[in-house]
Image (cartoon, rainbow, N blue to C red; front, side):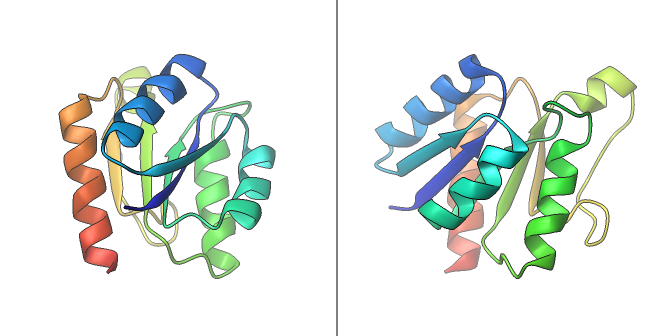
Length: 125
């Protein structure tokens, strides 16, 4: 199974996501901010990053994804967010603005999350 880093400032989302991923046999690590997430990427070397879009700043997840890609991070990134509901706009991946494999609206159905995790991990192998 894969090493998955979850970066989200909502402890309930982190706990639930981690529980479902561990049940599937994945090894997980967590961070609650962009700064902590950047450190954990270096320490944990995840094979998949599950990243919240809005944390301390409204664009922390987007900035983190772009920063990681510019540093050569090639593992898949799943972006979780309620920003579409908050702003009333649809968001999707974009190599420059939002360089992620999938953009998933919160709240996320655990079954859908696990399907997306499996799909992006299969693509990257």
